[in-house]
Length: 631
Image (cartoon, rainbow, N blue to C red):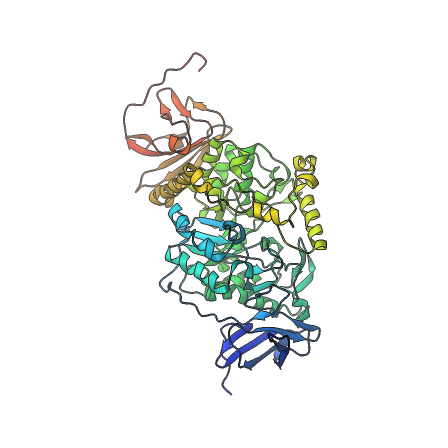
């Protein structure tokens, strides 16, 4: 008998004259494929046991579209590695033809220094909430200057709507957004436009509804560790080898079969592993091996800010590409709103914090963090700037509030423009959340379609989480917090693309900042960056470039500031040069009131609630300023 050739070690794969099935099921003594017939009857074909709890076998006479379950001792259930669940997690699995007419054979991805990430949720990004509808918006994102799309989780989950972080069929793209071929069409079109695409995956827990993995193996979860969302996953206990293969295979599957350019790994601080090789390092190896000719980008959400995630394996690291930088977000929100409640309480929004972020990435690299009553982070002074992903908004941070409002609604226009400039002209990789680029007024709050009992538990849990903010607790979260299980909550979060034209100045400002980022070598590829505090809320960043000429980014999140004397050497011009405005957040085309010269014979005048990018110009006479008596 000719040996079976498989693409991946798990799931159903089409073969000549039928399909081959393979499953890890050490919890059962026998496994059979139960084929579902339209009239309700079923044909059962037993699988052959292998070593270490695996079962496999060929089923003749079936093709793409065939629906099936796997029958084990406890009943018939969806395939743990199902490629599609047309009726949702509780229904049968479906055999999928993986073939697709790809046109991206020459695509190699985007270098890390070019990345500008755009996070989107398929169910709210468009009114239709599908891959095909989202695909129609891709040219606009490319025109904006985005270079990478980050798609929130798509692994199938129960109900009609949800964020996707409670997925239970990790190999099955949710039927809510279309067919697997639609997902591939989205990625293929993105590549045609020069856009990389990464997928948000959840490798720290399984959702509570529709998870049948325990019927196949009780070793998927671990009782050795506490997990915020239920049972931790078993990556280092007894029989962990099958679990590790399952997740490494999943990472390789999305990158190999769907041509995703990488993964965003959710809440990696809740992934526990004491093995000699951490599972994250193994996942990174599997992901890159699945597409050796492409640039694969692996970014971690890691609340504990462990720098080893992005160090190379030869330096005892896990080999990931980058980590989300919550510290930048937290200090920016305090600066923008003046509020420092709950996990913001360890931040002041001060000029020093922004200078330190620009130079060192994380603010907390092992210092005591009063909110958590423990040390936060680990030394990261050796990491390059591109190892950090900075953001002003993301799905979590927008929703972690009573109303899920966007940043432009929480601060004044000047500060919003200045912080946007700081984000998009910064050295870290910037991330935008859907609609941020045109000041969307659509909120983004938590929503999940669960059964009554679970929905009530989610509603109460969400209320307790938001109550950590003293102001929200005082406002009575039970009255004002949106019901996560209500259909209207989900619909309120859909973007209104008509606002793209209504708020055109905001969109054009983002596009121009990204053009400046690309076109200015001193910003795009500086030799080094330094910074200095100019005032309590004002600072300067200097981008050094011998070939392009240095640039100054002067940011003031407070009131107008006069510096006399201006005894800060980072403000000094190049020899025989002065400074000229290259870009200003106070330009009238963005809604600002204009930008007067910053350097004058009377000192430096730094406009309040503004960011100004200065470029060298040939030396000329400084403008004079007539001062009032109070000055």
